Image 1: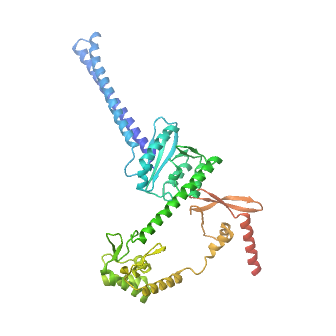
Image 2 (image 1 turned 180 degrees about the vertical axis):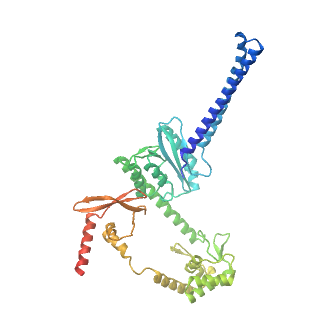
Amino acid sequence: MIRSPLPARIIHLVNTLRRDLNSIILLLIILAGTLSSYFFILSSLGGTLASYSTFLIFPSLMAAVQSDLNGFFSKQAGVQELAQIEKPNSEDRWIEDLNGGKSVKAAAYVRVSTDRQAQHGYSLEAQEKELRELAEKVGISRLYWFCDAGKSGVDFDRRKLNLILDLAEKHEIVKLLVVDIDRLGRNSRRLLGFFSDLRDYGVTVQTPEGEIDVDQLEDLLVSAIKAWAAQHDNERRAKAAIAGRIEGFKKKCWNKPVPLGYLKKPDKWIEKKFDWGPVIKDVFDLFLRFRNFRTVKDAINKKYGLNKPLTHHQVTQLLKNPVYAGKPEYSGRVVVEDPNLAFIDQETFEKAQELLSHIQQRHSHKKRDALQDLVKEYGLGVLEFIPNVAVMCPDCQGVMVKNGMIYMKGHTAHNYLCKKCGKQRKVPKKCQMRKIQEWASKGEGKA
């Protein structure tokens, strides 16, 4: 969670009261010392006005001590306040107050997806430094930091961007600082949607190159081009990486998880664990005999007493993997025939695949989902006729609730509001309403 400024305020208040308490104690000491010296001189020296001047040395001395102590406590408080903005090692979100700002609050987002990327100038530290300098330049007084290390730019939902939207919705920020828009993501459609959502809350994106305001046509076009370029570059790199792994696999470089019953050799290929031969053979034989995954799992675990009992998922994956017939493949695109890896013959493997296909078809939903067909055909409005059905937002899968009604060109439509992302949809539209009426009239005709 984002650290609230409330704890910092409490600590600041405690420090202030502590310094005030120290001052009060010192003043009481000075007052007590002054009165004591006054009565001592009065009783001992006869009480002449000139003799009283000697006791003024005491309060002067204590005032000097108070000044030194207050200076010490001020330095200690300053150290504690600096420690509050230092980033904890275990957190990826924190708040930093900057001196000399203009009461402008902003979010700052940094991300690296790989260690290699961090070594080529995109390290989190380098991004933080650049954004801190940018914040001082544009007059930011408070920064809400968000950090994603080792996260792909393709994924939006599982990172911090939704938290940034929450801050924008609460009007806690007016800017989002990033070193480049590709740090936010490499999906052009969703990236532009994120920018639009921010702008709806009055937040603009700020990079070292300048401000991005998607309400301005020029900024919108530039953002669209950059977002598309980032997505295209990501797709190109992904294809190149897959192609490289396929070529390596063709050259017998095993670059995916090692399946059960094998181990990786020093030359980067795999070889059989011969003690697994009977286990693999029995898995296929029992499956062809009983046609049930659980029966196979229980029988194998009972017979062989493996260190780690087989799971239902492992049995399923084992039966599907052509490596056990000596024909390992990579993502279904390339097959490397290696008879030395075979535990079973090709005929047994093909029989198992036929049975797997039959089981899959038997358990698949043959009947069509009538409710889903209705929504697809007539739109969300048709759900108005069906009780106890929740309307889901097609963008974020959040639950949508009614948010009033509006009159649209001859018919009344409901306004739905997503409780998660805040977007609204008006249903049914005129075309959807016409289809519903046609559908209803056909039903009456049949009746």
